[in-house]
Structure formats: C-alpha cells, structure tokens
Length: 274
Image 1 (cartoon, rainbow, N blue to C red):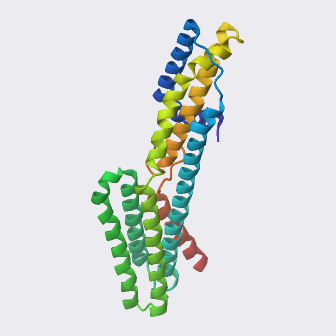
Image 2 (image 1 turned 45 degrees about the vertical axis):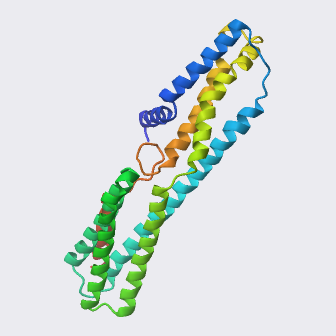
Image 3 (image 1 turned 30 degrees about the vertical axis):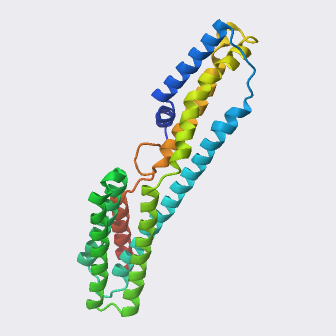
C-alpha cells in the first residue's frame, strides 16, 4: 500500500470520528470554561465522574457493537462457505456436469448475495420491501437442489446439499437480527446526553485547573475532553450498523467478487482435469 493511500485512509478515518458534533461540544466546553474563568466560578470537581457517567457506558456499548459486527462476519462467512459447497457439489459430483449447470447455480448464488446486500444496506424501515427477494432467492436455490435429483444425484447427496442450504438460512436469520436490533437505545441516549452536558458542567473545573497553566493553554483540557468523548461516541455509532457502508469497519457483501472466484475455481478445476 502506497504512502498516499495510507494517508488518504487515515484522513477518512479521522473524518469519521471528528465531525460537526465534535465541533459543537468543543465550542460549548470552551465557552463554558471562558465564562467560568472570567466570572471566577472555579471548583475542583472529581474526574471519576467522567469515567463513571460517560467513558464506561460508551466503552461497554462499543464492545457490544463490535461483538455484533464479528457475529455478522462469522455468519456471512458461513453463507459463502455453504454456497461454495453447493457449487462444488454441482461441479464435482456429476460425471456429466456442464458449464450451463454451473452457470445456473452461480446465477442463483449471486441473486441470493445481491438480495442480502440490498436488504442490509437499506434502512430497517424498508425491510418489508427487500426481504421477500431474499426468501425468493433461497426458494430458487432449494428448487435447484431438488432438480439435481432428476439429473441423477443420489438422495443422500441431495439431502447434504439441503443441509448446506438450511445452514445458509440459519446464518441469514442471525445476520438479519444483527441488522434489525441495536445495542440498548436507552444506554446510547444516556451517553449522548452526558457527552453534551459534562464538558459544559466541567467549565468551573477547567477554569480552576487553568489557573496553573499559561493563558495559551487554558482551553487544552476542555478541547481534549470533548474530542475524546465525542470520538468514542462516533466510533460506537459507526459500529452500531455494520452494513450501512458509512464507517471504515463496515461489513461489505461483495457478490460480484464471490461469483468471480467461483468462476476462477471452476476454470482451474477444468485445467487440472485436463
């Protein structure tokens, strides 16, 4: 990876966690500090309140959102693995397999992944619109497996393919629940309230501490606290929905690449057979 690419990615990452909300909270904190220092409203507040009221809940929410993302990745991998197994069965379990049959299963697998991608990148409110397409793709794949019996696939092998399909559906339902449900809304609302309130309330404390600093350093602490709190909240917000393609760590369903790999593997298998 070139240095310019790394710099570009670092810039995008910084932009994703430092936004307008960061500026608003920072300005409020600095304004509160300036007012308290001018009016000599100072006080030595305990910083443990910041950790208890904000840092701990946000870190807890980040941990929960990260686990949801990892669970979605595991299930996405399971869908791809079992889909590849069905493709291999079509390619390798028939002595008279042909490109038309392999292209058929690739098209059905692409439709399944593409419909999943369409469902998950759109808002949950549009779920009734996009979800039927996913189940239709599963149904088409089921009919395809059933048709393999007519081509001479033994019942035991067809049953194994149906098990692969069943596991794909289970993984899809798991991902759908990650897509539908978020970490506790009340906890996230609580954290956001204190992110806006605490930097302002701590104005007297920042003014108190600033008495020991040079004038130029008066606003260092309110700025740092505001940036830290809001950045943590933004990180949690980006991890909250791992499919919206907004954050740097989102799950990307790349149906085109998956089918391209299947095609490459099929061609490699033909060359080895020759």
